[in-house]
Length: 144
Image (cartoon, helix red, strand yellow):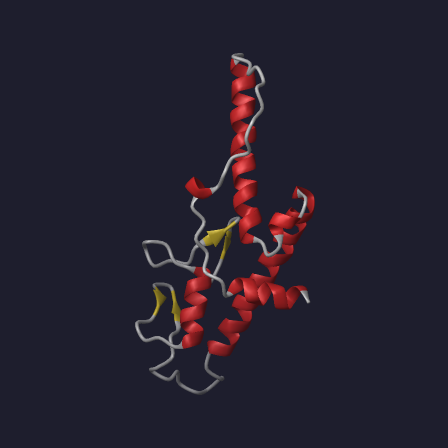
């Protein structure tokens, strides 16, 4: 059930703009001017903003508490990594058979110029930086 939910969510467009994320409203509370308190509050606000962004990315994340959502995010990232490996395996030619020119292949310069639906999906999920190199996530190269 979760895997089906993940597959559906993976096909949805992702447009997370931090400006659209609404901060929770505060009541009339006196806010300290102490520099240490200000720094701690700023750090907590940044963490909260990142958590709200992650909640919007994870399927069903807005309906969970933070700890459950983080567990679900871990499972979702692992699922997406498995999907990338499967798509890469399905996209590679069999041993001993030359690659068809209409198939997009992985190289150290990114993807070749000809597209197939599978390669287009992989590149949209993985993404590439401005140099054409695969992006990395948590010091682990994705797509390379």
